[in-house]
Length: 342
Image (cartoon, helix red, strand yellow):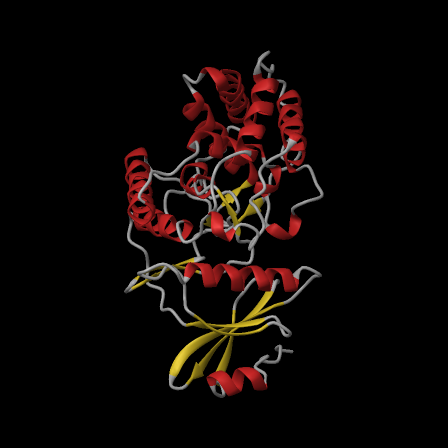
């Protein structure tokens, strides 16, 4: 049975009566409809499923209001809300197929989104949370299971990395899941949607998605180095145009942080209670465009290359390179991440 359109009297008084509601495909955590309001299309979204539904709704509303500071826009306009029913009403956007170099425009739009918040907004959203000691312990256990010797300095370097990530400067509006599918490529530019996991932190944690393979996303992809450099330059340029300064932080650290997170091998509903780095040695599983082992092998290669020549991450660099070689020897049919989004 289809869920009831939750459009109460307060929303009707503010926006009018919705017509022609059509239920759209969405995650299990929300119900989404397309409707007509006053002759124009709009989107109605209700947060459902689980005790955190109200928190997810509130995060999204707050993030959308921050994102509305950007000019030109980087998110749909928020037309109305019903906090009791956990409903928000959004401007409808038509999505067009992205061009082959879509990550360049994506990166620039992401920078402009990140730049909409600053120190004055502290506390309005949760602070970004990086990997912890349990993640480094799981990563080192994975190396042991793969029978890869751990360089002497690697554990201390991992501890230092986790500390640096926890102290990374920034009050950027982080989307939380800036994945293909959550970026609408419209005739007027890119708009981001689905801000349920928004937080405040360092923007490079999400710029890292391009190199590390979209770690929280069903759609994991890779791109050639020249295109990655163009996209990263576009991010830096857009950030500087919006803020007057260059972005602070370390992209290599950000990528290494995503490598440590076993939860970044599974979709959100499966995160939080299982050591997925341990699971990956016993079985592989598909999620979207890639398998867990494909994702992990890609991340190991990225971090091995990015940390090469860095004295403070030399042990991690060698460890990642050796782990990736062992994975490819053990599972020789592993293929690279796809180069194109579906």
